[in-house]
Image (cartoon, rainbow, N blue to C red; front, side, top):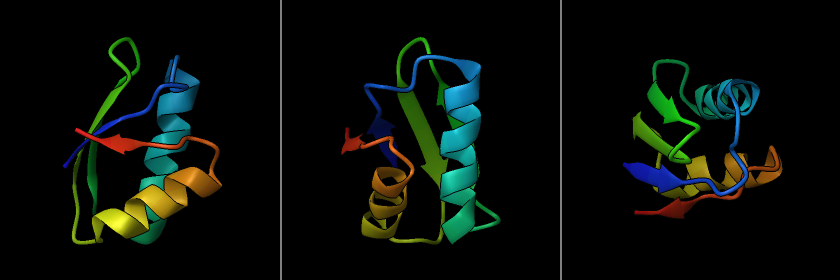
Length: 64
């Protein structure tokens, strides 16, 4: 899945986003691009679970 995260602006944000996603799926592959504010995720978790955990971490995401 590919997500747009408007407030992911730096490497620290990208690490926080990665940790949040991996909290619902420790084996998730996360490729974050803070400059484009895009995250590509390969996960077994549902899109809803990923978006919920990102909301809770302060990084609301929209599907692309």
